[in-house]
Length: 450
Image (cartoon, helix red, strand yellow):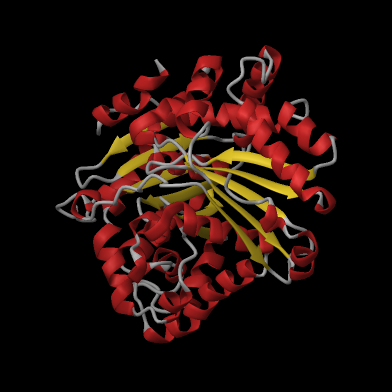
């Protein structure tokens, strides 16, 4: 049953999706999908718009500009022609607001008093449909966005991730790197912002979510009145501007990166994982297996952390429409680097063994995922973000069925996932270490392909 999830969702197209209780869906004639989540825990409302845009739409000449576009969203538009008036209006609405840019989604949200819903929808409409890109604003904002990149580079963990991504994705690395390229960010122009808008910022490539102490009939009516005149693009952005397929790794590669700020070494092991389009069942099995490894009682944790080979050993998978990454991030004991690396490889080699995890651990992992879903539902203002992520990278049906499908995952599903994407497959292994430690330990003598 799980293996049918992706194909069923894709074939459903624009059919009425399955949604949880108190979630209501409507699609306007211009292609804009709207979901209203009725949740009266607090007298607030949250509006979020998500666009299928982000790093995966960016070739080298646009690397990081979806992120810059997100920043410029909060600057000026036809109703609020400068940032000062924009900010003043958020204060009048009492709004909490922000945006994020990821690999496959850019989203913007405002949370305010429920009585400000109509005013908030009009405010969002002006920002999403009628932005103004002034040179003087971009002169100020380009270095702000680049500054985020520079702050990230001051973290040795980011340095390791960045080098790993370059080797993992090759010449398509920009399509997995939302933070971008220094030169592209600093030389961005209003004209480039308009290229992004004209490609992706259309109602038929967007999802509007309204959540909080609202009634769906009235919310739908208000949203349609305000957003109904937003013209359909006349094309499917992802057909006109197709995302290139990521090429499988051609070999296993290792690297050691020196960094003066790496007080302790970090290690990272990365694989190409499943994607929603081609293997939605494996995306679900991946989450369950990652959760099993995260249990304190897991063999992975006991072999690495409990025995003092590492202080931290995280393993995870990121659900994606276009090839999700699998990664293990390790903070090894600096005095036992070689032993830690060898034990990691030994553990990976054992993952397909029937007794690697117990039935109890499998059930514990499922229960943990179920509890996480419950906890993540406790704050109404975060519900739209959870939904829009899945809308962009999977589907609304996938979102609705996710917890139930976690509970259905079998040992065979997990074995199939490991064998197809990890066991015996090419991977990228990286280490970041400071120069003195690199010289004394010489990890390149053992941290190499065998």
